[in-house]
Image (cartoon, rainbow, N blue to C red; front, top):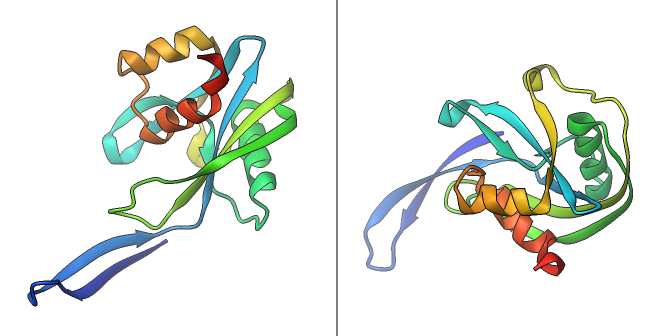
Length: 158
């Protein structure tokens, strides 16, 4: 991660400073099975809250699908026989250059979680698709990337 402060000259000729964070690409995974999907709940330090969200993260892997598979397995224990790339989003294009690839994972096999030390206390739980839609509508799922990923991944459920 790198913090940048760029000196800018605006269109009207005035100067300013633009601060932004450079971070590596990430993956977010919507794991669907038999009318259900998986969410994880974990503590997010910047907002000082535990949040429900889809499994997500970045890893030192050049292959985007391999990174998505690693994140899914680490956080939920699930292995997916099928991964479908749905698109690339940006976490917060005004604040960071970090992109996030959205994946739909299906044909799931259970396994053991392999949490990183920073993820200890993470809870993985299966919800019905209707429950996830309701959690988003009631603002229980507040992670913007998760809301956008659900929109992309669950399009055929509507």
